[in-house]
Image 1 (cartoon, helix red, strand yellow):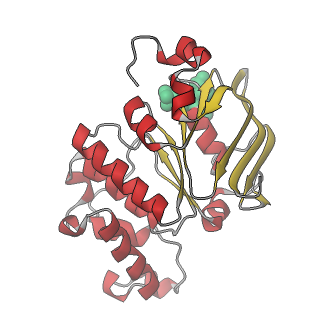
Image 2: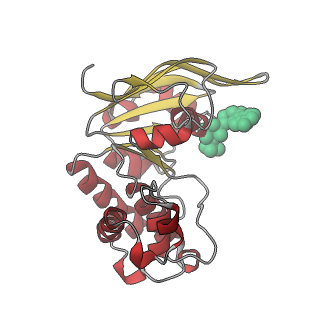
Length: 252
Ligand SMILES: Nc1ncnc2c1ncn2[C@@H]1O[C@H](COP(=O)(O)OP(=O)(O)OP(=O)(O)O)[C@@H](O)[C@H]1O
């Protein structure tokens, strides 16, 4: 498909005797929001780690923006346009929101510029940080120590930080974990706005209502293998998925 931004072709990942991913093929089209769901241990985070170069695939191919990135180191994959957040929040101790948005960016300036106070930061990096602050509505918290903020706000700081890399594909690992209903709804609207501006998003999420109301396409993993793919409406009524994962008591 010519409009595929990310394409996985029969990707497998083996850890010793554990087959964490088995011949997984999936596509994230340009400007779409795609979700990966599945029970604990299904291989979702491993999938993210293989795409971002944290793990090397045991077999198969990962193609991003027309190039095979399967053997690329993660820093090169970030530069190619993939940014991610993690299941467990990873913010730096003692750093403000603003500092997080500046330090995460690829350094184009000299070594001297890196150690100078942030007001002398690269103007482009500064502009990207300002934009991320505005997109995620974090202006009020600009000078707050990020780790002192509520869980929901910390997740937003992580997403804003990922956005400062100027990605084409944003990968979010459980973005609404720990958020209340209003925060999750606000984030849903925000991700739709980002998609409206041309971003593609791949996310892992356990919150079924969130996923069903946001994603254009869903992939379902179970024991490392894809057991279904389709629109939320198709997944909601897929008997294999209902049996393996959602369960008849789960409201979607
Ligand atoms: N570095 C590793 N070494 C060995 N086994 C691993 C490693 N990473 C993941 N696994 C195994 O691979 C399988 C898939 O794990 P993974 O974390 O990808 O699942 P998941 O779907 O993200 O689960 P959860 O929803 O709980 O985060 C599990 O059996 C896990 O123990």
